[in-house]
Length: 133
Image (cartoon, rainbow, N blue to C red; front, side):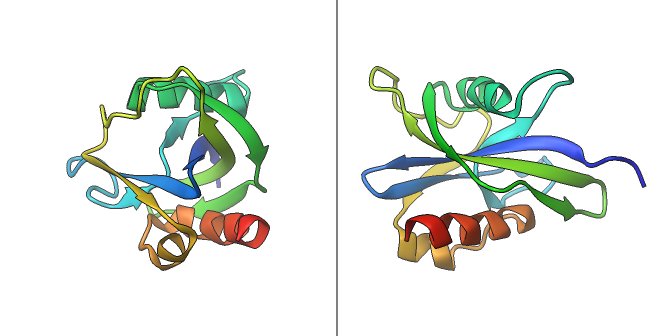
């Protein structure tokens, strides 16, 4: 088995709510909700990759405030190591806009606990709520 693919995601928090994004229908896990992020390039730190990915995917800038324990998830196509970070929008950032996703939602903790997210993101929800709920 090859090494897990390193990926990152953001739990962007604003006014007590966490943002989720809907994947495009034509991508792997199309139509599913997830925390936005993406692949970590070789020799790129996970936090730096996340700031880059959020700028590319949502057109906004974030400030990372915390990190959660990375998780490994096995999909049929690949195994990933997901580095999750808690973040806030920078003070002078434009609002997030779905440039690669089809929609964005802001969920309070109760709705987040009930949300049907992409399989790799479900353990991240639990880690986040254990720390912040």
